Length: 308
Image (cartoon, rainbow, N blue to C red):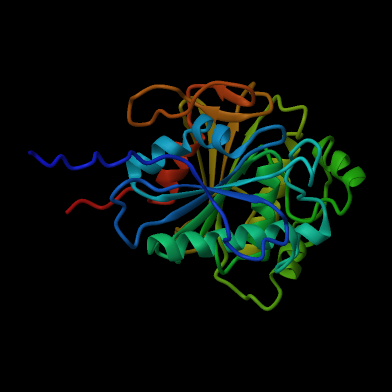
């Protein structure tokens, strides 16, 4: 008789339980490519309202990019018992303070992912759409020691709202504070942390009437102030036909960047296809605009394995 070795199961999104005390009562999903070596990065990707972890992970392109570029993907999921629309509670102080609520739950997910996969703790990144984008801002401020960079897609600055009523005003028309006022909100959230600070990439549609495009400018003011750099761009160009601006420090290091997706409404920019720069699957709030935000974030964060 011939012994037949079992076929290795292909990687898939799986739920991880028991990842910590989970004070925010979230669910943790994870995608780990088969044969992932130790020392690779971690990306946390958070869905928008009405979405779920698996749908966003696949739709935004993050699952295929995790496979292609060999990193661990953490997909937090909100539950309707916490928020009827399944939005992350980016406006509730009990969920946005370090060590508390949903922010602490997501930080525990990161710690679990690092422990499980032997990931590089200095290469952890966070991104999200809409409420997930706003929660990205929260995590960058509350846990700047944990995240090397963030990508806010159609999101809002940290500290814009402290109640559900105030959240709607922040979303549209937005809140206009000075750069120093915005920066102070990050410094207050970070406590004793003095730096270094995470880098930030901001993506927003110019025709977004759910979360006003003005929020992109407030995010730039917030994080250039935190980094101590001018809030005027060091360089501007176009990528895939869309305006792109970069804000650098005195050494030339890019610390903040923006992508303005002309004419796009509220959603995640994607570019379905199999070419190198393409990713994503079109659907609700996953908008085919011929540029995939997730792919460009992998470039900004240098997630690709080095040759050799």
